[in-house]
Length: 412
Ligand SMILES: [Zn+2]
Image 1 (cartoon, protein in one colour):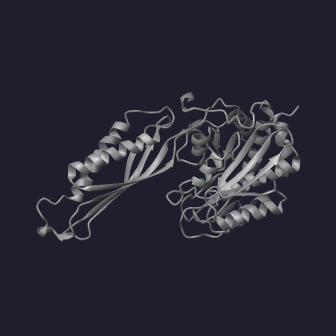
Image 2: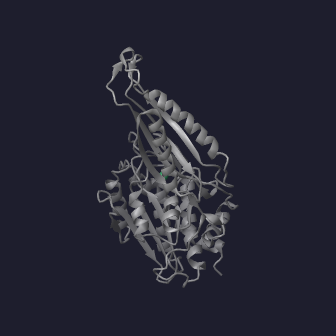
């Protein structure tokens, strides 16, 4: 009988630590700030082709860095488990890879080239062992993940074009909680202007509007909005929010400024229409402009819609069985503290997504690191979850065009 323990036993000797570390190092050594991940995408494609995989390149609206995709087929009908990651890194000075004791460091070591390397290793293990009983595994890696430089449109296009699995694992560095709900988010920048030229404060026309006073009024109003949003709470992910991170106005102490600007975020709960959130924000600014006689411009950038995962989905059970067999316990359910590609899979494709990756740190800093032992665990866990997920699903569950089972936020 193919118990979880037997599956793990069969897979474990094939997880090759050295091969995994080499793959991570070779990905990290190619700089790939968001929007310019072409060279590292080529590098991943080279690595996979050298391993004998048939590599597909998919522009998906971003031809300078086509996404990389491979599929491992079992030869039997069945569901597809997808491993997905982003190859781009935040815009910070490049740090080359280094391997010391149990750590890999360098740009993207934590977020998330090592995680992609672990997913690649999992596919290799599945191929070598022939352990996948049915269905297939799809591996995808892409650019344009990190905001504000990327807007996720490459992944969004892949999902909309049907280049997706029936469930997806995302090796972002989150390992202590199984995220089952997350807020959607947008960033905003508001620029408040007055019509007149820059002028000494004593020379200003008496009826000229004050951009600083208008900005102060906006700050007060957004504070009241935040209070209002806090009155509604979600059992897992708290409340919606509006946050101001920057306020700027003026050049010198006695010049009457022409412009003030503020920048921040707006987050909303699962089940909220993101279009309505943007519309409400815009309407508030229109009222402010009318009442303060200023011109108010809004730059709204949708980052990701909200996220939910049905804890009763068989994919979650398959993952948790493997997690318990490897680590001794199932993961507790909890919130997803950030937005990631799982939000897009859920919102655009109804695909159940689990974010689970290695012990790592320094994301969005120049001091990224990942724990190699834990990276080995991820490769093993991903391979095992594929075997469990693909074997237990009824093989006739999906017709090719039926689309994935819809998991709605109302279920949590
Ligand atoms: Zn990431």
